[in-house]
Structures are given as structure tokens and as C-alpha cells.
Image (spheres, rainbow, N blue to C red):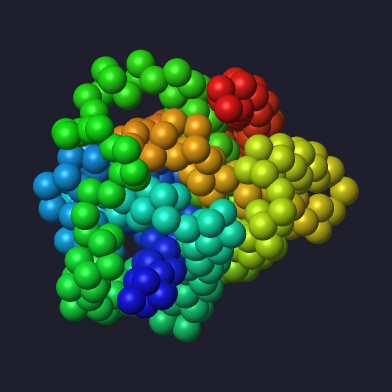
Length: 387
């Protein structure tokens, strides 16, 4: 029973990754077709992430009331609906409209599944599950590239992914009895739980070490999505790649992320979350350094791959250490706010870089990434002092 549920969660993580790199892959073509400035990708992202912030913040309360199975199933349905809406959009305002259900769906399932895995599975499963997210994020640029080259439209890229999400949502609805029998549909907060109701936001922020942990998520996710959203544009504008080639080659970041999380699962059997986060930070620094090399585009491609490898252990290790650092009974509340801060980073900082790219230069990307890397490393050291 537990094995079947774990397999389903693996599939859910693939589905979480599928939409995440679609916008960045399509945008070099999409923004020209609908007649909006380059920086407007940030507005779409912002709309999505406002929804994810809200649903993440209230994930603890949703889990209390409805259970993990129902929240996951409904969230995937909303994501599929939003993606289908993108596939039929012809105007910018339509993209904004359909970004709302997509964002609301993504946040709840992300927070609840991450907490469940952190509570019930070993560190290697957390890395391999996020590797599956990377599989989805790596596949979708190729789906978009296929749609652009063979189907002559970015809309078909979104349509293909929406169909995949719709099939998954049907499977999850069918599997709700499995969630209940396995105990995953209960509000499980570990032995000795004394909480009879969800923690308030005031109580969450008062927990020692919580704020640096939230800021660490903010910095990491600002770095990750800036890389994801603007990699294609960076290759087009700085190295004169065609949009079609850039959509495919920008997946080097997600290729590195996915392969890195596969390897990290094995490393997590022997090494601590703290060590793996530090190791990943150093590798990201090497990748960012490669983007500064001006001689040939191969260094930029290698840089995106190396950044992905370095990012691989950071996100899953932060989540996995949360129940140990803050307590199992508080983990869903903490992880929900972690996800919210992650999406605040997604919401604010990549659009800001869009303005920098449009009005100054896209070549400033590695400087921008480096700032967040340094801040993230500092916040991590603040959190681990609590352990």
C-alpha cells in the first residue's frame, strides 16, 4: 500500500515540474506573437505565484480540514485547467486570467506532498522525488520546442502538458481511498503531537530559526527561477541563438538539476543535509562563474548545466531537515510558509531581472544570481546554528 502511494507521489512530482519551464521556453516567441514587451513574462509569473503563495500559506489549514488526498487531487485539476486555458489564449489578458487557477493549484499540492515526504521517508527519497520534478521540468522545454518547430505554435505545447495533467488528476481522484487506507490522508504530525489546531502565522514566525529559513528559501528560489525564466532569453540576446534552439538548450539547467538530484539521493544516504547544501552552494558558484567567461557560448551552456547540478541538493535538503530542526508537529506549518517565501522569491525577483534585462542588459544575469547565492549561504549558516 505504501509503495503504491510512494509511486503515485513520484508521478505527482513529475507533474509539478512539467509546467514550470514552459513559460521561459515559449517566451522569446510568445511575447512577440501577442505583442507585449519582454518584461511582461514577469507579470504572468507574478499572477501564478500570488496564487501559489496563498495556497501554500493555508496548506496547514487545508490539510486539517480535507486531508492530503483530496487537496492534491483538486490542486492538480486546477493546474490542468489553467494550462488548458493557456493553450487557448490569444491575448495577454487571457494568460493572466488562466494563471490564477494554475497558481492556486500548484501551491497546495507542493506544500502538502513535500511535508508528507519529509515526515515519512528518508533523505534519498526527497532528492529522488525532486529529481522527478526535474524530469518534468527538463521534458517540457522539449515539448515546447517540438510545438514551436513541428506544430508552429506555442499554444500546442501548453495543450500537451494540460492533457498530461488532466490524466494525472483522474488517477489521483481514483486513488483517494488509497491515501485514506495508508494514513496519508490524516493530519499526521508525529508522535507526541500536542497541536489541536493549525498554528497561527504569529506563532510560526516566533519559532526560533524560522525567519532565516524562510529567507533562505526566498534567495534560493529567486536564483532558480531567474535562471529558468531568463536562460532562453540570455542565449538569444547575448549569444545570438535562435529562439527554437535556445528553448531546447536552456534545458541544460534542468538537465543538471535532474541528474544532480539523482546523484544526491545516493549521497544523502551517507552525508548530512547541512553538508549537501554547502556543497551545492559551492557548485552553483562555479556555474555562475562560467557565465562570466566571454570567449564562447559553450561556457554559458556549461554554466547553466553546472548551476543546475549545484542547485540539485539545496531545495530537497532544506525541506528534509525541517521536521528535525523545527519538530514534526510544526513541519506542515513551517513548510507551508517556506513554500510561500519560495514563491514570493519567484514572484518578485525574476520580474525585476526582466526589467534589468530590458532596460540595461541581459548580461547582468550572473551578477544577479551571485547576490542571491551569497545571501542564501549566509541564511543557511544562521539556520544550522539552531541544530
